[in-house]
Length: 166
Image (tube, rainbow, N blue to C red):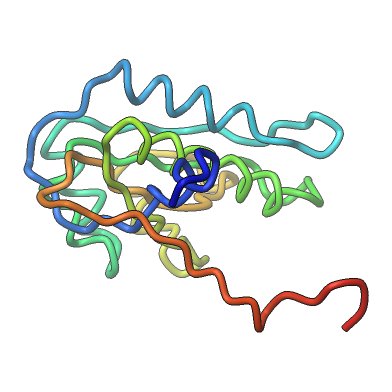
């Protein structure tokens, strides 16, 4: 890939194996700044982010989610959350912020995976991080130093692109 924009975006891959090393707080803050640079309808910015870096809490959060158990060696876990009930564009705004976060983490040399947070998993995670019931976790993202190389790629498929009309 020679295009620098595509190179930047293609670095974002789901990483599920970590070295166990701590994650630099400055890198996490840069990624959170990128997340908060996302577009938001009417500049509502519904996002909040809970960041856990204490190893036992990271393990407990990841263990509470059936598809995040691989995060037991992550150096951090990030939980984007907000008040979903009174904001029509919550999912769109949170999705944009979460993708910005993932792109930034990958380009800072960190690995991460976006784990979905359906309603049935909310209480389990809430019990570990003590967030009030009116707040909704949008995702659970284990973050860490990748245990191996992950090759950048695009999944471009010209068969899925329509020009001018269907």
